[in-house]
Image (cartoon, rainbow, N blue to C red; front, side, top):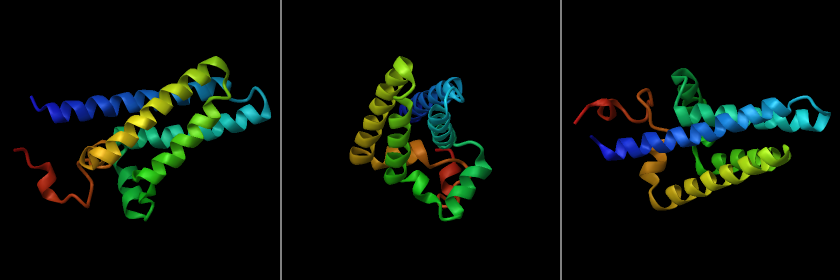
Length: 143
């Protein structure tokens, strides 16, 4: 068993669960008032994009982001922007929102630590997948 793959998959699923929970919480608060609807729309949009990036699915969307000069979604700056907006707006959803803002902030700080100390793991978590054109054929070959 390859523990680095297991670690990467576990972290990827934790990030995905956080974004999915933020999406569901925003869906619950959607439409109560105009501003809550606007905040919920922003949280839902960015949570869906970050969920997609965390799961690396669908593959065609990942290739579109990589080949259409929208690679900022995979960079530290892109994650900073998206996570900051999610944290700010999800905190407006009452007590559950404040709890999820803290959880999202925790995973944001984990991402910061990974990006600073282990950029190779950061790339594996948020970018590398079977259809990544920048990796070439050697990435898919089993050892």
